[in-house]
Amino acid sequence: MTLWFLRGLHRGVVTTRYPARPDGSAADLPTPPVFRPEALDSELADRLVAVCPSHALRRDADILVFDVGACTACGRCQETAGSAVSPSGEFALAATSRGHLVKRIPLRREART
Amino acid sequence: MTKSNPPIPVQQSAAATLPPDTASGACGEQATAELLRQRIASQFGRSLHIRTLDTGSCAACEQEIRLLAAPHYDLHRLGFFFTPAPRHADLLMVTGPMIRAFDVAARKTYDAMPGPKIVVATGACALGGVYQPDAFVHGSVGDILPVDVWLPGCPPSPLALLQGLLVAVDRLAGKVSSLSFTSDDQPGEVRQ
Image (cartoon, rainbow over all chains, first blue to last red; front, side, top):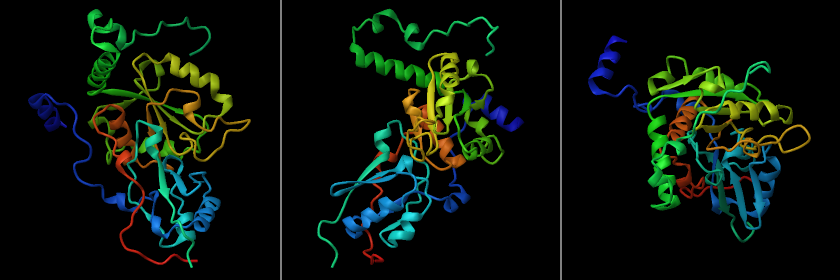
């Protein structure tokens, strides 16, 4: 405590930076999913929209709209779509604009045969 | 905030403390806004007092917010402090889907805070994810209060909360706008 007090007096800075080292527990956190666009067709996108419990996904013609802000990282889309969806590992997602959190993911055009 | 208390005048905002020549449009509205933003950032850069506001949350967010004060995360080292009174607060951390029964209390809390003030919508509920607007909830904090920072997560981990607070005081740039949430690395099979 005394060390920190003297350090603050010496340097004139009373606060420190955002965690200097990566946090060890960060890897265990549930994180919003990442989508692979070439594996997403419209049928799969509809199933993902239906399975999302928090209205984070919606279809907009040939685009899957993913609202990261609404995502609760429940993992149901990952269960449904398997390899097309994987955890992103990103959890520090604060944004100054709501629009930054809404991602538009283009779907594959032709249906999978 | 009982009814017997006389109303306390709201402290002057930072706009009122600007020099008259810069505020009167010599360098334009945008430059004034930038100057104001810098001044607010410099004011908030060192120490900031946080008031939390629970508008119908499940308390998971509160649990994570409480962890911020624990030694592992040590919020105070970064210059943040929690305060029980909105009159002492610079930043309002709102959790929950903003139930309609809380309209008056939320407005009173916001009005009681001295300017300049920051509102952080915390958690997926507050961002409009979990509950859709209906007779009981607004569904999003943004419908009632002017939100400055959107902080996703269900619940946001203490590290995410710290990042959100630092984004709020302009000490850390938001990176979410650069993330696409798509990947096209290894092509794999889709389970049908």
